[in-house]
Length: 248
Image (cartoon, rainbow, N blue to C red):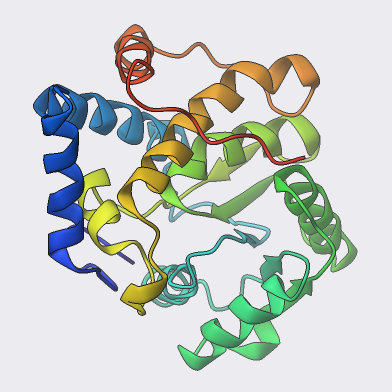
């Protein structure tokens, strides 16, 4: 899996440094911003209740599609390192996204017979519901499942599964153990030219907090109380950075 000591991809370091210099030139306290962004990032990507339990029988692994093709390596390494060769893996996403990640994972020696492709889901809720349904159709007990996604997406993925999939009682999310700083530098893509600009990653990260606020009232995810330190960090960041807009 991508980690701080084992990153994938990369961009011109000068671009990353130039962005921070531009912010400082605008009078922004970049040290404070880095700290606050790290606080929000760590909240989104990690929670002890998502820990992988080697003694638990998981009904399946659900991959929530993204633009980071390196997510296929997270799946392949997870299966290999955790001995999950008998657990089906659902790749979910429309417009060829599921197939793209399936093929990339197969190139990393994920067993094709282990894979289920779900090609219809157009958003996180559909990723969750359609994938769980397919696992059930394959006779799997879905009370415990594993979800794999980009680090900033993890909390919303958990909230979606718990809200929209009544048969799911426990979700493990082995999110990539990588700092926001390194994710902004390297992403999780082998081709540096496709990695998004740091400001895009910041906007997406900020947008996740916005969705955690709005989505429970719309019935998409369960509500969680955002810790005060995360809320304060987000509020300070909102003075400088705009969250990414919601997709329709």
